[in-house]
View: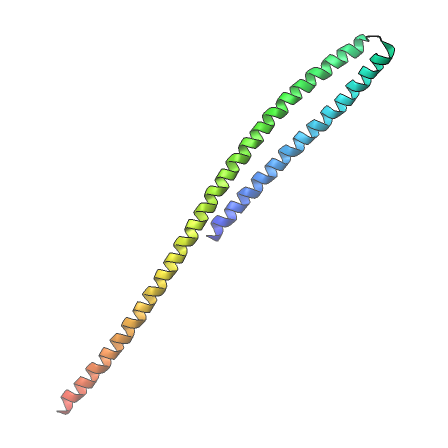
Length: 145
């Protein structure tokens, strides 16, 4: 029982750690995107101030836009995967909790049954001792007569 509970908590801790790592990666990607967005905004402001379209600026903006789209798609997929894992983990945790409750109930039922058997054995032992005592008394009476 304790082993099952320990295993459950170990698996839960591992899954939580994995999800934290995934979240850290997603946060890192978000910071990168925020940096690139600020960079693109600075370039856009520079264009707005000068009115010139810089070829390098345009290529850089196109590249940033492509990277931002790729990262956005990847983050969306990662988020879907993490959400799916979280849902699966919650479902598994609920099933394990139910199993743990069922095992606890079965354990209690077995302990109750064991106690009843002990009481029955004690009662039978007392009855047997009483019968042995009567038999000995009867044997003494028979030998005396």
